[in-house]
Image (tube, rainbow, N blue to C red):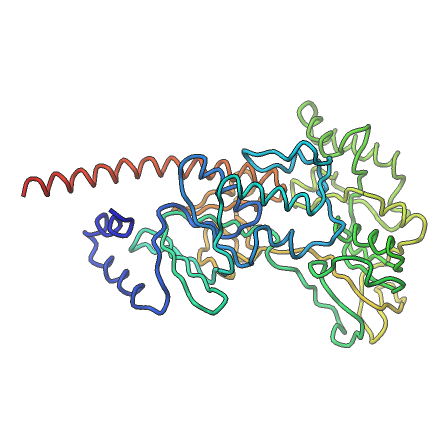
Length: 433
């Protein structure tokens, strides 16, 4: 018995059901009934969830708008990028990194790892399918997911479970600035920045002082550009390693024994001893400690990989917020004006979930994140799940993927019993005729 027949059998008592199915089949889009979950997004989150499901015997279908897995990593990151955390904190479930990989794998090494991961678990996403809408149909008791292919062909997937794996970095955030249309130089988001080579000798203003902004500034310096960094807010800068080990790993170990407040104080004291008073160089620290701030707002501290030394030496200039852009110059809020050849926006990314998921309970319509905070934001109603929205990197992704697979497996086993009972009932009825 195929899945569509099984659905029809289960819902035969509902007179609205067949009407709904006829509406789907008579529309211009094709319709496919999926026995397992549909996963939207083939980044690390989607791959991890599919692998955990497969390991538990549950098939899935991944829909990916791009033409490759991990499109953010492959298509929208700069060349010098490395994992900011040690590899043991960035592994996906069920498969570690190769032993020969360095502590902080490069962008290409991480992509190679993800491709090997997909091969190992035989994960084959449906590429070039952009999900335009997903909505729960209470008449069917299933999710209806509509995707659009490259040639505009629509496809509808009907599934019992829907996993949102588009993550926190689906769309680039482009701030509005007065005079953007007037500025004659190049303005681009870091998603379009590859290397400082093309900016050699140029005056470049980098907007945003997170990990990406800091690293882009360093890359520009290494290619003999003249970068300046706009610091619009307070920021915690920590050394990537302290006391001979990774700062992140040390923090996780200390949190097993001491309260967060004391660990924060320790991190700040060691950072001050190693880096000095960052406020002297225009990088004032927030009032909250780095770990407390991360827990409350999701704002990640900057792990310094050499940028601070360039700021101290004057190779990177720190500037305040932008007031407006002129034809060849930028006016800052302190009244000063400087000429620049290009502006790089290291202003981050945002979720795009509200644009396609027609659901208002689990996800916020404002920021596209689950309303319930970590660790409870992974599960919604009617078989809806979220993976990769924890603001805790790949470690949070792995935790979500494992929970989701375990939960769906329980439902899968229960429904398998019902399917068997339903089949036996049909066989019994047909034999008694």
